[in-house]
Structures are given as C-alpha cells and as structure tokens.
Length: 465
Image (cartoon, rainbow, N blue to C red; front, side, top):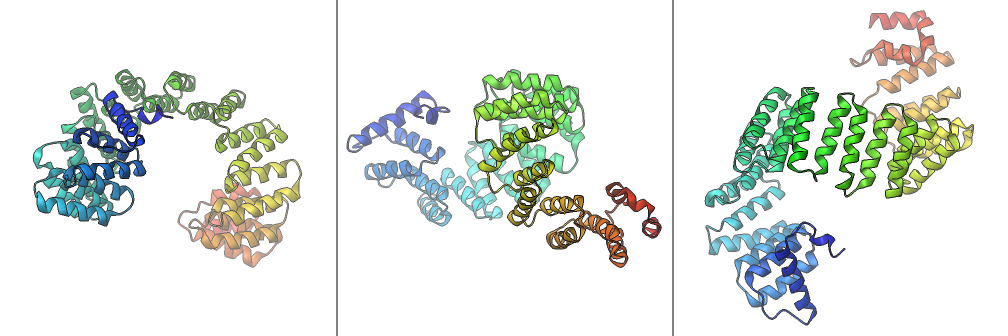
C-alpha cells in the first residue's frame, strides 16, 4: 500500500512526503522549506488525504503564518470538503492583498464552477490566463463552463484553443469529440482530429479521438489504424486496447478483438474486467463454451464481480445446465441483494426447473424492489401469462403502467390478456390505447401473440391504424 500511493509520483515528491511524515512522527516539524511544503500539500490534495492536508497546514502556518501559498491550499481543502463559501472567503482575502494573483483567480474560477455560476467562473479564468501559464488547462475549463450553458460553439472554440496550447489535454479532446458526436458532425470531427494526428503524431489523445471519429463514420479500418498508432505512442495505456478491441468487434473480427485484449493483460490493473470483456465477446456470438472459462477467470480475479456471476448463470442456462446456472445466479444475488436484474434471472431459472412457488416469490420481490422498472413489471406479467394467470397479469400491468414512460409494451400485453379471457370491451379499449400511440407498430402485437391475427375485429382496428 505504501508503494501504491506514490505510483504516479516522481522520486522528489515521494522523498519530500516521506521526509515530512518522518519529522511529524518524531514530535513535530520545526522547519520545512516552503517549496518542499507545497510539494507535500499538493500530494495530499491530489490524493484527497484531507487529514494529512490539515496536519501539514498546521505545521506550515506556524512557520509561514501569512503565506498566500498556504492560504491557497487551505481554500483547495475547503473545496474538497464541500465548503465553497469558506474557500471563496480565503481567496477574496488573497486577492484584496494581491489583486494580480493568477493562482487565486484560477481557484476562484474553480469554486464558482462548483457553485454553478459559469459566468463568474469564466470571468476569473480569463483573468488567470493573463500570465500565459497552463493555458491548455484554463481554456479547457472555460470550454466546460460554456458547455454547462449549452453554448456549444463557444465551448468548441475554447476546447480547440486548449488543444492548440496542449495537444495532450485529454479532457478538452474528449469533450470536443463528444460535442461533435452529439451534434452528428462526424465528418467534421474526422477531418479535425485527422489534422491533429498529422500535426501532433505523438499525441495519444489525438489518435484516440481520431479513432472515435472514424468509428462514428463506420470507417473500421481507419479506426483500427488510429488505435494501433495510439498503442505505439503509449503501449501501457489500456484504453487504447479496449478501443482497438471494439473496432475489431464492430468490423466483425471477433478473434482479433479477443487477441487485442490478451495483449493488454500485462498493463491492466483490473484484469477481471479484461477477462470479463473477452467472455462477453464470445457470449454475444453464441459461443458459451469459450465464454465460460473467461468468466471463471473473472471471478477468480474478483470474487465479488456480480455481473460476471450473472452472465455465468446465463451461459449455463443456455447450455441447459440449469442447476449450475441457479448456483451462479445465487452468487450474483448474494453479492448485490438489491439487484432486480439478478433477482429476475433467478426467478426465470426457478420457473424453468418447475419451482413455481420460488419463481413467483422472486418475481414479486423484484417488483417490490424496483417499482419504477418497466422490466420488472413486464417480466412478472409475462411469467403470469405463460401460466395462464391472465387476470393476475392484468392487475400487475395496471400497476406497472402508472409509472411507465413507455406504455406500448404494457398495452400490448393487456390486449393479449383480454383477448385470451374473452373480455371484448376491455380488449377494444386496449387496442385503441395501442393505436393511439404514434410509436406503436401493429406487427409488434402480432409477433407477441400470432393468434391475434385470427380476430377479425382486432385486425380491422389495426388496419385502420
């Protein structure tokens, strides 16, 4: 654990922190150089170690009682603690004494951003940019504030300024890519990021963004090449391997997709997610025999990976090994007893082995657990309908439809229930409820219950629709 907290630090930072902690353990820090103290405080702030920040500030403020450098760090600490007003009070005090302090101006921008006051945040970021330091970061922050105000053209302009100052400004590159994507401007994105890779061929972020733009245009080969270049730039960055895997998968080359994930195992901190992703590729292609070993590796790496236990249950169910499927699904539910999807899967499995009482209890529990989930109500209703309990299904559908934003699936099932029980007036009302929804397609109803196609009156109503 001691090594872990210094993993992303250089030797000087590590030595400064360890020296400070050694002195504090010996009874107090009598003196410490301000530069060293700033390094120590920044390390604790970056790692969100608030207790250590407070300790270091107490020592520092005794030695340097009026140092703005320490006031800035105290303001930062207040921000971390969710006390933006306390941070603002300190920063305003600094700016009264030193109006041109760009560090304080930048911090004011951050705090006003936290307070959802984008105009004030932008004002202070603009002031902070006067010294020309960290412009990539500052312009990116201004872009974020314009994004909050939904002024996307201004946001894009500042993200581009940010990237021009620092081609490795990952957040600006990503956010710019998102705006292009959200607005469907895929060709513009491809041209812009292609130019970035030409101008900055060693920018990992540029290659990733270019690959993403190619993916949106379904230019799979160009995307593959972009992600391969990203790996050349930084072979230890797992993100590029997952992007490359997705490109091969979308191109239909599933074997290569899995092979790419094998390559990143040496660099992945979370190997369980890598194994899980391999298993999902095989599972999505109906190859459960190959998927199961990877899901087994996943749960060996992380025994509390609930989704891995769940998909193991699905795989065994598909192979008709229902009792093993139940065992796997029970493991998933034991990890997260509040998961309605785990509960629904277990209910379905008990139904398949004929344990109807257990299945019924689990479906009921799932509905009570997640009353706003359409899936819970619909799957419980489907279960009741499979067992010809149409009146019970109607009761469930009537309750579930109240909170549903998408009522078509509920109304389709109500049509079927009333059709099966011969309640004609209710049937016609349910059909009208379906046909009044512009998103309804008659074929969805026929596919759900082909017998409906033999009912002349219902078919006539559907034809009119």
